Length: 349
Length: 259
Image 1 (cartoon, rainbow over the protein chains, first blue to last red):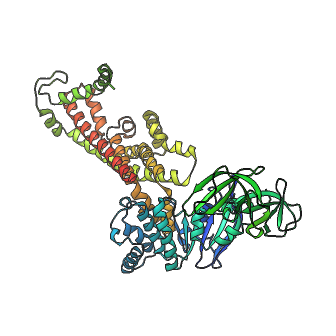
Image 2: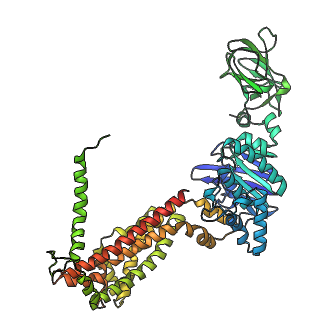
Image 3: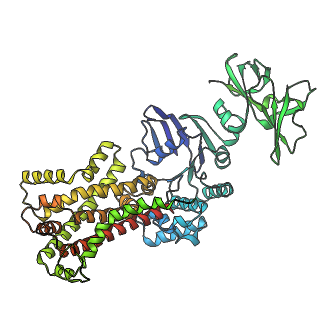
């Protein structure tokens, strides 16, 4: 549906987007994820029409977008600041886009009423944005964007201005709405948990480049680049070289079990990543595993995080165990994992 | 913390220094005697005489025409100038040039305009004064509106474009309403500036019926009478009202923007 082809954007000597290509499907909930300054917002602004790329093409259903002014694109952008018009009531804010289409007054009134109903703000139609809470403002912004029935809705950090509890509610709300109205959503976020829980597919950005595009589970279990392995979720990383087998050759620890995601030439620099919940804590006397000392046990309710210091590894190895955990700080343990639970990727850094 | 009472002395002394002459002027305007310097008793007779003076009445009407005309021109052009400067260019030089007439010495502007009007062979009159006043007032309006613009959020304008509005609709429906308090404050400022402007008006009015400040000047040349005091007191009242109204408008606008 939305096709981004080789888009590059430079600001002076800084390259905000470097040859980015993406394809987003009809009805999809797509997330652009990355740390701040990685170019994801620039891409959003290019799609909306507030920035022009130096190179590349953007098309919607085969129709070129870049030659159209922002007000002529069948796309809505929900701003991070919401950008509600302070001198208009909620109902006027929502009606603004429809009035621009010169629809009959009766139809405008009806559609505004319907959309306010959907976001649960019918009682607040006559209020000004200043009289609303953060969560309510966000709903108004959302209503104002979807009432135009755009083919594509862009959301710039939609939940970042809300406090934690409201954020969880709005997350569910967003998913419900997307399902209900059937519009393609593209959301920009720096919060990987948010991206994981909302999106059908995620594109991970780093310094203006797309590092991986995948479904959340695949992104989590099969990161293909060192950046993705480090950025998405907690990970234990080991550097070494490829061995040609299901293992990483490490200088300090010998052979570490893991599954290479792609054919790697023997002795090429490689990185092994294993999730904390895939690491097993074993007794000191166990035959297999790396010996270390427990330096910290943090209890999170359902799980506990055990930090194990292993000589030769920079920083402790994180192990997630169910419940309160039976080990104590200072205990001598061994950590180990199975080859199918760890991934090995080329280390191009 | 206890503040020394002594420190209040220079503070109040400054105020006395600033406003004593004005207080004297207002008091003397109610003088029943003929002298502008010795108070003899309360009377409103100078105000009455003022109303009966043909020259002053014409001067006042001319001044109001010039002030209203130049304020109208300066408000429209100054607002557009401010929007243009803040939204369509990043040039600091253009910025400085646009605001220059506000700080340029009146005399320079007056001589320049006189030479220019002569060069294009314009007959001088009230309209040439109006244009001249519009010129420097525009810079003041632009400066006031500009401060409001720099505090406002460009994402509102982008949101308007995104919702299908063209640039003109966006300007009229979104940008302009945000600027109203600034525009009103700028207009009131322009009006008060034009009201008592002497130098530029004197140079550019030619042989036409003079504006009020010029009338007053020619009266003072034959000595100050309490009549002039009364006139000055009225002007004072008008200027104060306009300035206070202007300040309140900006404050209302600011508190609304902060909501």
